[in-house]
Length: 440
Figure 1 (tube, rainbow, N blue to C red):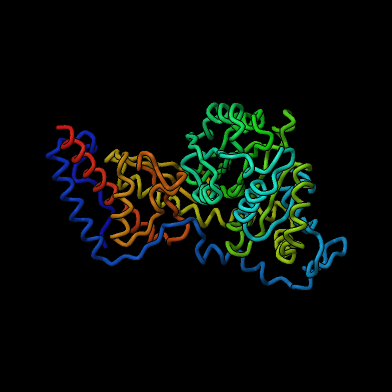
Figure 2 (cartoon, rainbow, N blue to C red):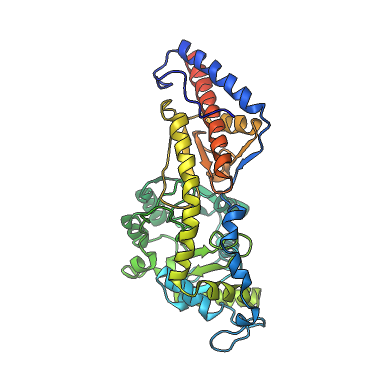
């Protein structure tokens, strides 16, 4: 087992002469061949829980099923009824999000399915206050903060909605760019947002950014903010980022109808058996409940009650998340230490250091991401596809790679980051040498 390998020179790669870069490339290529020969099978593709993390929720399945079947008002959750969900579940998540029960519809196990569903409904049936369905209005556009969540972009691409990249910063999207598009172009119908511990950077929108969203005056009468609050309770440091409640901000501007908020317990309890939450203004809730009544007679209320009885209240949910934080924090520490040890001196990239969420975003030198990911794959380390954090899978600079430390063990992470560092160095050196050759 090799140790953490650093450069053979103390110079950064940008400071090296071409002769020094060629010599360094040979060193890293020899190391890479040794790593490759180990026959690794390591997976850093997606931010999914491992079995040990999932085990933290197993006690939820030990509850007496007869304690779950009646709500406090006597509804039998095994039967039809309560289209918007069990009151206890709506109350729990309304308390968590700082809302009222009438702002909540409980979904199935996936918030992604709810987002997909809301896009379909807007495209085919329209939204509250809109003149006609989106697909009857010609070419329409969505704003996409980048890098962002690949599955958001795949939903909009699925329905032929054109996507516009909006740069992200540590305080959120470029709000002047957002404002210009939203307030001047009626073909802009929505924007994807992961406002807390964003995917993949782990950024949290500042209060000023949330306020700017609430203050938007859309040119379209059917514009919607898709507020995917997936990581709202997923802090893992002592200091949890603060996110301003967007509905509180909207009240000042009378813009509550503009927001669709989503969250789920997919990474709180079980990724395949959580509960999903949709939050919106009373106007939107009433409008969408009417549409929903044609689609279904209700989602899984037994699972909703299972979660309510297990957590009991918001503090119970947060106590559970502190267990997860204690489990995930060492994995992030391992990944970040590996990046610093392996690549800190080379100065060929930068990375985020989030307080929560599931990812670290790495930016290498432009033109190196695809080469790095391919080298990793050949050495037995599966990474997220390069470009996946951008609409249409195209990273304009080919530099961003999403790192997901939750699924591998710390030992696997240590090995994965060794290999990743080697591949980053090779890709950077090849690019620098090729660039210098092209310019000479």
